Amino acid sequence: MSNPVPAHKIRLSELLGALSHALDITEGQPRGHCVRCCWIGFHIGKAYGLDDAQLVDLYYTILLKDLGCSSNAARICQLYLADDISLKQDFKLISGSLSEALRFVLSHTGLQSGLAERFRAIINILQNGGEITRELIETRCHRGADIARQMHFSQAVCDGIYRLDEHWDGSGKPDGISGDDIPVFSRIALLAQVIDVFRTNAGPEAAIREARARANTWFDPRLTDCFERAAREPGFWQVLQSEDLAAQVYDLEPARLVRTVDEDQLDDIAAGFAQVIDSKSPYTAGHSERVTLFADLIAEQLGYSEPDRRKLKRAALLHDIGKLGVSNMVLDKPGKLDDDEWRAIRQHPVFSDQILSQVSAFADLSPIARGHHERLDGKGYPDGLSGNEIGMETRIVTTADIFDALTADRPYRAAMPIEKALNIMSGDLGTAIDETCLDGLRAALEKLGRMQAA
Image (cartoon, rainbow, N blue to C red; front, side, top):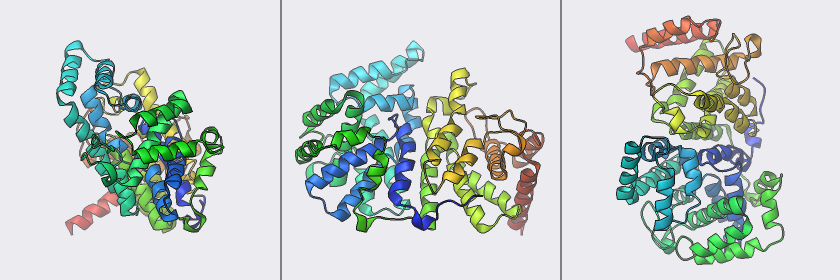
């Protein structure tokens, strides 16, 4: 493996800013949404008078505000019979009025389903809308705060993520708290989110109008005033459209409080994003962790050093990060995929590569993520690589991925016994699976079996 930037030289802001693009695509937002929100929210916080330490916690709250976004995707598809990504994207454009909510339900629910099925889904949402919304938001908020905590972020950041969808007048979720009881980081993050969504869709004036319209209901009116003051500063809107936005956002942190990442936190951030990935579908719960375990077992058998095994484990944890950009209507479909759905699935390694290649700490892992569905015979995807074009680390992750896919439940079939899975994989030696890797997996599983029997 090549040598990435040493962990102690990696700025946490740059790392999370790059990884936040994975959260953007899960929410159906244009690339850079969380980074833009960070720029907007930071200036609101500064105008509000937050001190440097508070501004740093606000910064990470906003970058990570959507950490729990994948956890309700499958449920959204089940309830609305619709593509979770486009539904989330459009939902952010409604103000929450009853008439808008009704139009949204009628225009988005079950459009590809039979009439009776669609009618039942609409009736269920209209009758139980409040409880459904609370359930979806609560799931998202709890999950996001839990993952942030595992990534070593402060309680203030975790609380800020958990309370993201509370409203100033108490009409929000999950707990309906109001006013100053809502953490200021949550209040600013939600305001910044709405501003970016409306600016992206209709321009700065639309964003200003929406912020004003929701002052005293969704938003703390003091913060909307701070936003308007910040928005009048020279360059505020221009930076949001500039090509060097990310660099400017990464330089926002007060210099004396810039944080860098050590190796342990880097591992925990990779593991945290693996949980975001695996939360996307009930059929992938634990998938990234299991692939990581199997890949590490193979690498150990093949004599990899501890540092190289550590890097490989990060690659395995993040190999499917691009699946966050694929609808659960495709991921969880029990039947055969049509051509469009298959094309969507084939894009996920490309998304993984695009996300990881922007992270200096993980850039050397991106070819592994991009190539984990390639085949030795050249019939894989997305690039049709073959033979020696596929590196050994990629072959290890591919072997681990196939093994877990066979031995875990899937929407189209139940899990199969280990020996049956290994026999099926033996039939693909030299075409899809590297023989050395499969031998390593067999040896590791036999060793584990002996240890458990002892």
